[in-house]
Image 1 (tube, rainbow, N blue to C red):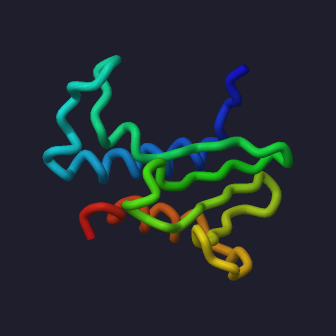
Image 2 (cartoon, helix red, strand yellow):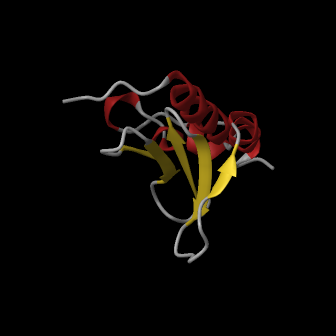
Image 3 (cartoon, rainbow, N blue to C red):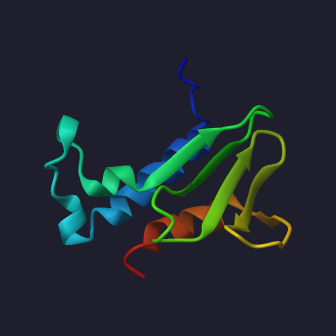
Length: 103
């Protein structure tokens, strides 16, 4: 069963991938199914409470876990940190996505 992602999550993930493809070596689409390495970086997981988490599939490019909840909006937390999630906005998440790999 495939879960339909909320539009904001789709846009965020697409922006992450697009930014990753600006790294020349990551834009070479020589993987199975015509994928580029950049396509494999985001890890997206739908949770039972209806929220969706997006993080780094390899745990080496960024340590932020972005969470979108349909009624509570966006939040972030950090991998391997004891700090509580921090409220975030879609605009801030998109700003991050557009510079994540290129600064």
